[in-house]
Image (tube, rainbow, N blue to C red):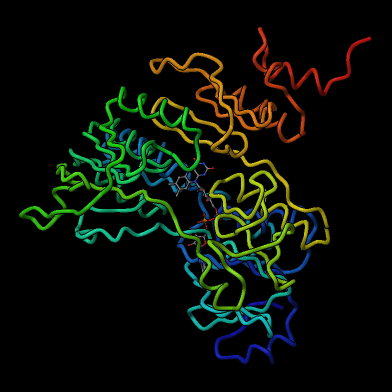
Length: 444
Ligand SMILES: Cc1cc2nc3c(=O)[nH]c(=O)nc-3n(C[C@H](O)[C@H](O)[C@H](O)COP(=O)(O)OP(=O)(O)OC[C@H]3O[C@@H](n4cnc5c(N)ncnc54)[C@H](O)[C@@H]3O)c2cc1C
């Protein structure tokens, strides 16, 4: 019997007749992985994903990177600069093979905790034993005068990326508001498509919330060398229309006017936590969960971008926006639903590709970390890492075009191996060798 009830059926009456299972709200990276992990861990009950977006669940990271570049190639092939590659996380057959019900283009609008039901916008009511919020986040909206002018966009969904990819076919002057990861990824992609690109950032350095000041400053210089007009300490004040009614200028807080036929606002996201709040669950910049990713309701969990969880590596409640966080949360919650009891403690890591720079971060950096550059930071061909020390012990590593450092750092930090500052900065030190040395028994 399906957990999906017919329209207009009384939830409580029908619930009595149903074989209950797990309902997941959100068909993004976290929601899909939770369903897949439930199955791979042996869950035999019903698994239903309610996914607001149309089509198969897809990867978001390429949307601001290769997906925009690929359009250039497609355009050269005569397809008019449009790329139809949908970036699915799993093919259609996966859902049938795994007996996972995927309800695409359907929105959950209310959760009733006493009857353990979820109401969808089309009137369908689903019953659950366990409910997982994997509702992600949405772009923060700028309150700037002129923000509604045609030509101003955000970048979160496949639809956004398709629109922007097409807009880059004709755009000449691009203004990006916000020098965060997505803003800079888009900016470098637009630069590669031959646009003049201005980036406005009100903070003193790019990616300031996530990077050490040392690496933020390095990126400011490196991006300017690439050709980005990066304006720091300069926010957006207003947008002005041209004769055609579309955006024509971005006016900054210094009063400067930048020509703009395309604007991308990348000023961060807000968690989709309103449904949980309306159901009486605690929210505070995300759906508040405990170390088992469980809300105050023992049958309800939250994972991925929408979850505010006690992060042992950040030293308190934290919300992360990364594929690692979404997928590790999802695997963990599947285990918890199946009875596992360990608290969530995975090491956070992240990557971003900005033009020729592959940035990778192992663990969360803190403002007072002591930072040391190891390697060659020459912006023309950089290969280096920033070692971050806390109380003289390696605590985080940021890498630029140094994937081997990143992978070794992840292993070292996840295993709790202590590398002292003295050792890390000694002649001939390598993270890879250090990891091997500490984990493989010495030859006799
Ligand atoms: C352009 C872009 C580039 C990125 N690049 C990187 C990167 O390089 N590296 C990295 O680690 N991370 C990157 N990220 C972040 C990463 O993609 C996210 O952290 C990850 O996708 C979060 O997964 P999620 O499932 O929690 O949320 P989402 O992927 O946002 O999925 C949530 C889904 O839930 C749906 N939903 C919400 N409310 C409802 C409802 N009421 N009913 C039904 N469905 C609902 C939403 O429509 C959405 O489809 C990027 C993100 C973007 C947007």
